[in-house]
Image (tube, rainbow, N blue to C red):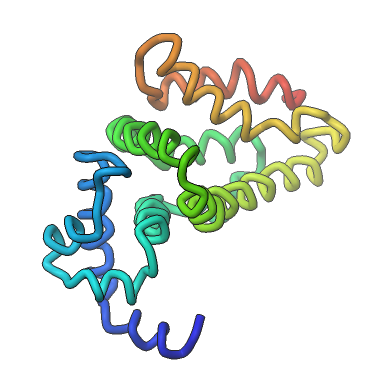
Length: 196
């Protein structure tokens, strides 16, 4: 990041930044990605559109950073001493209400991603890749502790299994994911696939 960009960013307090991000996510829930405009964000947040573009560069980057900010805590803070404990602690970081709100956001964004390479790239860079890195850290620690065999083929598919649980529940049961479902799913599907 350039020094000028750093200087501009420092003018926004963390509280104001959090307020802006919450307003962006509220708008995203209300109107969806395609209908969300920087003009609407500027009006909702009582900011200028020029300020938004100077601070975040583009609508996809603003959305991705708002989603990243919305994450309650980072997975790199989790280390219970066992993979089962780590994954359950990971799931305990969100309550059912937050999961429902996040699921609604992600459903809208999944559709938008297919037609918007810039949004896809911003989400990958700012949201998906950091979470994958943290999940891989949890899995590497489990391998190092001897909980999971290093050559277990399921290691490459843990994220796919997790995302599959989210998508399948909504698609098959017409119900959003909650902590009870995720805990059961992890214990019945993911951990056994890893030999735990």
